Image 1: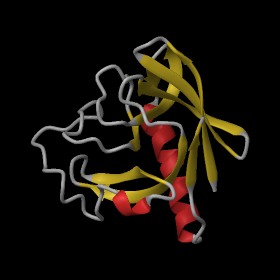
Image 2 (image 1 turned 135 degrees about the horizontal axis):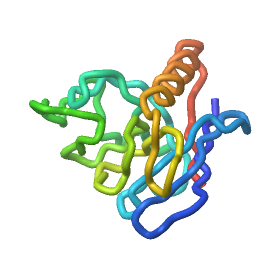
Image 3 (image 1 turned 90 degrees about the vertical axis):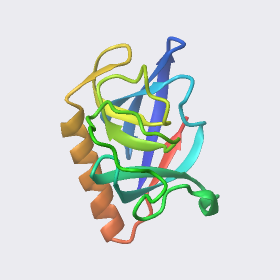
Length: 150
């Protein structure tokens, strides 16, 4: 399954985009312009994140999968006492995740939701859970999942 992230505009601080699967728009995205992922192809995997205490969509550059900083149980990232959707990770760890604003993101994350203004998303959890379910089902069927960032 190929997921395409089309970046449509940037105001210097936030990059807004559209996430498409098979040419159909699924949701909008927001990224921090300084710490966003470089354009290219990434593999998408589902890993349990200790930081968020749930399964997350983790991005790894393709074909360079040997340099991933994420292990299956995220040993490099310590637990945190208080975590909400807008908490930054302590390390650079590119993920697709729910969130409503990308201004203070320094972890390379791509936030999903429905755009209402530049860099501002609503209903992030609903869009993230739908995307997570589609990726999870594709991985169960042994289909590789790629994110193509333009």
